[in-house]
Image 1 (tube, helix red, strand yellow):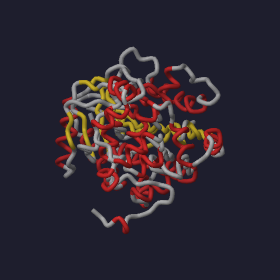
Image 2 (cartoon, chains in turn blue, brown; image 1 turned 90 degrees about the horizontal axis):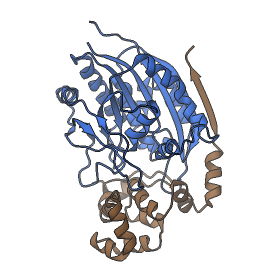
Image 3 (tube, one colour; image 1 turned 135 degrees about the horizontal axis):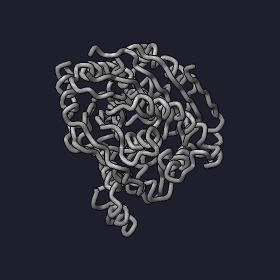
Image 4 (cartoon, one colour; image 1 turned 30 degrees about the horizontal axis):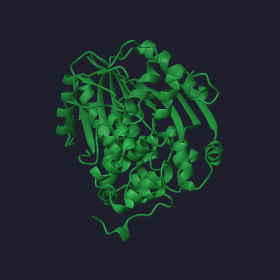
Length: 284
Length: 124
């Protein structure tokens, strides 16, 4: 019987990937962020998940404005990261899990969600950077990937409530999966940051702390703000917290925080990493 | 689509909505093409010819020619796509921040560092 072992939430700033490529993990600017992964590595080594279900947003690699899905679920046998415009690409390919993807698709559609389904799909730094952070020494990825993409680019965005409910539907699907995999749920992006406009560089440590303190024990607290409220509170790109909310929804058990690291700034971003164990073990 | 006068205004914060998505389509489409290294090279080789292929509006053409990031955003550019163009110009997101806020890059970075904090929790 499958098991949802936990949730890993992390920022996905492209500069983190560049820092990894340059070996800057111990550089004084980067070390306080990378050190947040020490307990994550220890936990992943102990729990050894087989599958990662990743809630993220695409930044203009796979999706353009010609067709912009609100929710898209990957169902490919393999996913690739490609050049996003800066000549950085060619990360190791990500093996998919089409059977589990289709099970999730069937179950979330039965839960009255209407995702776009993708049998061919590239994944950008929002998947690649968290994978590099989690398994820095892997020759090949130890997990199969199910990517779930949420539109945080073109308004209107889905509501925070809808994202949490999508995650809950995915969590129900994972619980009903007959395989024996250990499943890690990931939510990537955030926390507060804004790249455009006169308010570029905006950071809101109070709102970030509110998110970090509530995402585990009380995710409903984040529903008091709508998506535009979150843009105002967390910045245009801080709205990526929607990915965290969806991932949190997929953790269906007794959620226990194992580690949390909040470090400002990384690039233009208030960076954060949080690890939660999901302690509801499924009946055999 | 909602009446523009009734849309919510968040100070200093362009909200990329259906209005912007329509207005900025050509510029964003050109920027999206820059995922391909050959397309980036073609733009560098002949900027005007490349922009003509994507039928940029006069406002967008002018903004790109002047490397005017706020004007690109005002013309419907989305920062995720513009970041690909900015890369061709050798600009990172701190440079973009400085250009939009009218600050020197060092001052923009200092503004980010003014929030500097590290807070860590670990379960026993």
